[in-house]
Amino acid sequence: MQIKETENAGLKRAYSVTITAKDIDERISGEIKKIAPQIRMPGFRPGKVPANLVRKMHGEQLHAEAFNAVLRESVDKVIADNKLRPAMQPQVELADGYEQGKDAKLSVALEVLPEVKAPSLDGLKLERLTVPVSDAAVMEAVERIAANNKSYTDAKKGHKAGDGDQLIIDFTGSIDGVEFDGGKAEDAPLVIGSGQFIPGFEDQLTGVKAGEEKTITVTFPADYPAENLAGKDAQFAITVKAVKQPGEAEADDEFAKSLGLESLDKLKELLRGQLEQETAGLTRTQMKRALLDQLAAGHDFAVPQGMVDAEFAQIWAQLEQEAQRSDDKDAAMKEIEAEKDDYRRIAERRVRLGLLLSEIGQANNVQITQNEMNMLIQQAAQQYRPQDRERFLEYVRNEPMAAAQLRAPLYEDKVVDFLFDKAEITDREVTREELEAAIEADEQDAAETAKKAPAKKAAAKKAPAKKAEARAEDAPAKKAPAKKAAAEKPADAPAKKAPAKKAAAKK
Image (cartoon, rainbow, N blue to C red; front, side, top):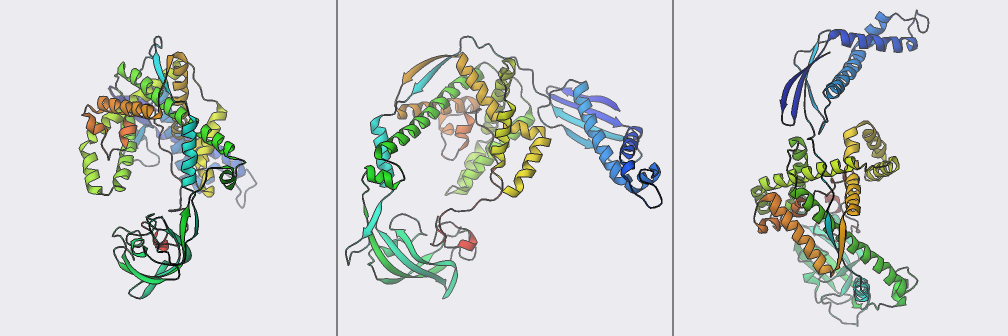
């Protein structure tokens, strides 16, 4: 095997590798010796099949396996001999014209991690903004739950349905006199003014009374998922079986019991814990931002562009998803396109901070246990369908880069916790609004620094990466489940958005 360096500029490295035909053939011969004792062939005793016959029978397969093994070893040798720290998986290309029995010429290109000196942690100071959870905040949460759990009672005879009233209806939908799939339901609940149904449906039922029959015409939105319904006028024959009026749920022991709890005090206790957890999370976010800003201020080293490209792709995918959900998709895309270079600088900042945190962790022996890693892998596997989980686990076991991607967010958090322990922390009590405002200000400041743009850009409506841009601490996006239902609610009422087969499904 011959290895020659062809590029050494900045963080880029490239090598030409020649794998001799002799090396490949020796590997094949070694594999033949291993499998020959297991080969069975008429006319030969078990294990006595000549090597040349084994080669003739399985030559193509043996060559492919041997070649791939030698290729992997050659890349490993390039890395080991040159003491490289690859930033990402090396790019390996086989030169044109390779045939079995000839030397194989490869090109190996990669970027290496920069040499980053772990900063001194002396003098690290942070302010921790804390929010005490008041009794009033807990009671407000209780009342909010009560308001969302209204009970409905039959209205007086002759009562005309108004905003907030609940109707129990049967309906049948048709287009040009022909019923369509998903357009029929019985005893369907509908709250006037809730926006549950497609535009115009609820409006035309305002003022109806129990026992009334009515036919209405509505137009499905042009972007309705069911192509056979999108933009079309539909008629719904409706029977109003009941009109109900909302009642106020009282925040008392009986209400708590209706939720499956022992008492109102138990509900308050549960909600207080949730609120404390929420505010603690916000406090950590604020501290983490402040910490990263301090680290970023003193470091400006070159970073691997491949890592920046990957980080930018993640940010951009998030932006595009948000733009597609916007009311004006074209305007949203135009807005983010105008800021494309800014978001690339944001990606670079995130990569730089990630490398810096990694260096701090290694210098201070911050580690992730095998137990913690196993839990991470199992959690990630749960996002996939049961039939796909084993394949995912096998992939992570065999692909170091995949395991590293899972490991990175947890490792980063452990390094941050380590730095919190090292820092001199002062506490200041604030309101939740003040804490949220501080986080928003940190986001804006970091965005301005990374983007070198006016603050209004950092706060742009259609810029979901605004939070990402200020946070190198954001973990890589989790993979979504392989298959996920489009909606969790029953598919028995006309909706704004629904799969084609459930054309009239609730949101």
